Image (cartoon, rainbow, N blue to C red; front, side, top):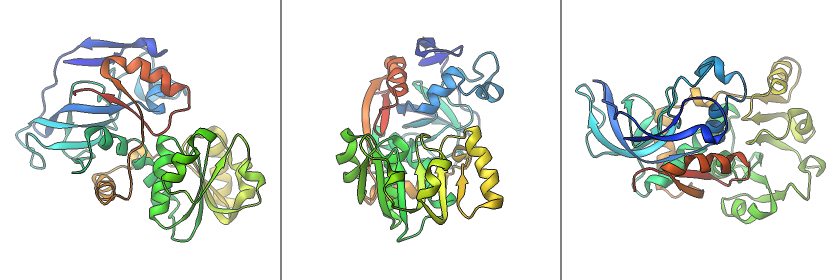
Length: 322
């Protein structure tokens, strides 16, 4: 089978399309014919080992798992003898949070991983889009911030993968949503359900006099120190980027402030139940995928270069099997 192999850390040029052995499922595993995957900022971080701490978890000198990619949508091609949840031909979507491997034509996953039947009204590309962003946004807003109906929520980076789903989920939970993005994405963020949209190139939301119950920085661009004046008492600041400053602020605000700075390792908290919840929202028309660009498997390095520019909106999809 063909796969994108990353045998050393570095620029997108380290990604090579190679012929590798097709995996054989263990007794508790399914083998998936991958139809769609995505490239995320996290994939770029794993590829170049930035931040450096990546090396301590995923290989100090070179990647422990040379085939990158976490999110996938595809078809069950075969099942191990102990598998009971799936059968050959099932159309599924989910994530491979531990050993990656989705940037390939086939991969194996244990049946108990976050993997379920995809939405009936979604393509493979739309399904994998839900895995990229919506799962993270759900953990931050519902489980970490305990978002409530009637609250005022600001999403910074509202047109990115996490931000686009955060706008939709905050709206679903009944919040009044303000999205912050660039001018070219204002209409997109409005269409996703934001009540107000701020062009960050023209206006600094921290200077507008408005206060919010939750400020969710989905792109790691605004610090708690910058945002705390725009938080209500007992307001919550969320960031997807665990900078040293954010971690120190978490410790300080946990003890000494009514306004809290919070980061959570959302990738370690995913479950089948979260996927089921999002699948039902998609099937009910409550959320939609936002796909920016599509690339073929052999164009994965090009997709990495585009994602690293930091201006993508929604998902960047890799189409593996047509």
